[in-house]
Image (cartoon, rainbow, N blue to C red):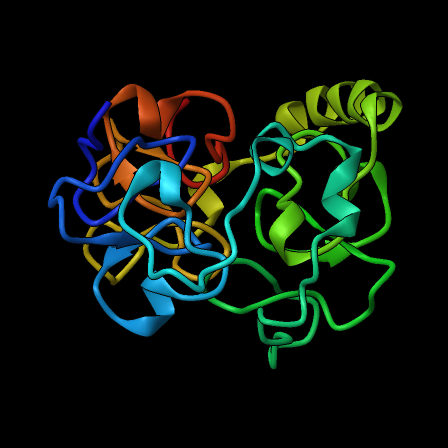
Length: 192
C-alpha cells in the first residue's frame, strides 16, 4: 500500500507516494543520496543500483538484526538519546527504546525497541516490558508534560500534543489515525 503519512515510508507506513522517490533507512521519502543510497528500502520506494537493501529479517526484527552494520547511522551527540532525530546509541551494547532513550533495561530493549539505532532483545524481554509498562501507565501523568511548541510534533524532545484528542505516534507525530494511535503510541505525550 502507499503511505498515507506525508513523506513517510517503510513497514509501518507503506510505499512512498511519489514513484520517483526512495525510502531511506530511517523511513523518509526523498530523492537525495541519503534517501536512495545505503540502507534504502527498495520494497517501499526506488533505490540506486548500489544501495544496500534492508531484508525482510530486519523488517520483522528477527535476531539477524545484529548482523546489519550500523556504522552508516551517526552516533547521537545528545547523551542518552537515540532514534531518527538523534542517531544510534553511543555504546554498542545499548538498546534504543521506542521513546528514543539509550539503555540496557527491558524497557529499552523490549517492545518498540528501535533496532536501527541500537541493540534489541528477544521475546523474553518483551514479556517483561509489558509488565513494567503497565506499572508505568498508572504512575505517569501526561498533564505535567509541557505542550509541544513544534506543530504536529510530540515525544521526549517536543512535549505532548497540543490537541488533547490526538495520539503521539512512536515516531513523534501528533494525529488521530491508526498509525498514530496503534502499537508504539506514546501515551505520555497524547492519548492512545
